[in-house]
Image (cartoon, rainbow, N blue to C red):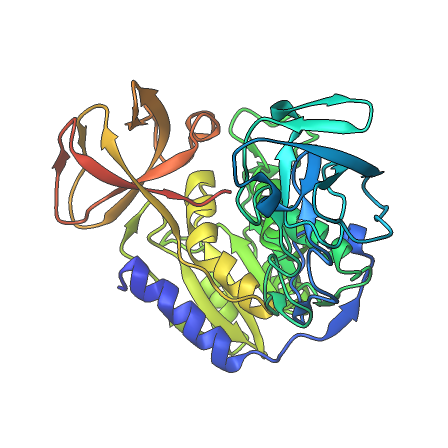
Length: 402
């Protein structure tokens, strides 16, 4: 049985070496959020493309203000999008607005708060240094600079930057398709009224949402009953996608049939258990040249194992680099105990106490407790070699559902 770090590394290794490179497509900029760039974005010109004022005030020659104050003649006005025709001479200034280009001959801007004006004469009450309140041409980027590397997942800020440099149709990798299949005779559709001993299908919806958040295209296969022929048919459908994610049917029970069906289809298993709680009976393998994950059926187990193992697979197949897990340290608000031997991922919530961030585990009734999960915003990682974490000590939390 692998430690979760080993299992995650195994997923990354296998898919990185065994997957075909995703095809690319050109899409509209407004549709590019969370897609993965297939080509770097480069600066089409210097930014800013001129010496730019960052304040409303007066463009001046700093040498004219060496005494700290001066009376200058205003010879014009510049607003954003315009420019001053001419060269600023000794004893002159130009009124300038934020974002406007500095006139030739000027090398600084005095903020309007430090001036007073009567007709064309401006009294300057303080001196300025050369370059003050000015962003020089090319200070942000030079023509040809790489602004966003290829393989980056596109964020809101990237969309704004691409618009600035004229990339209105970025080239991105095709999103990997991820088939989502839940299993279990006890599972009914979310729209149905369950019987006394049945549950509604939450995993299909949560997994589809997690796939979309991770940059994949979810293909819902619904729920399969615990019957070999029906399960085999659904699994074969799922193996047409880049990744098949199955929730439930991977434990040791009499009706946990997923592994048996996959073995009968000739599957290769890279691991079939991970030393974590919840999520121990997690399965990863390849069948008919497609990757699959078998995740435990309890909702918290499903979401934890998706974040740890399926998400990096989607990153790789979608052309993105796999980033590290998002971890943080916080003081523990209350004492926590659990059996040792398996690394725990406990639903928890961050809270502020004065200037310090603390983490509090939530009362939960096992890995099927969606109520507790919905109130959490992180998971406390409980070490596998301890049975008690004391209130006040620093612990590690991980963000898996962001």
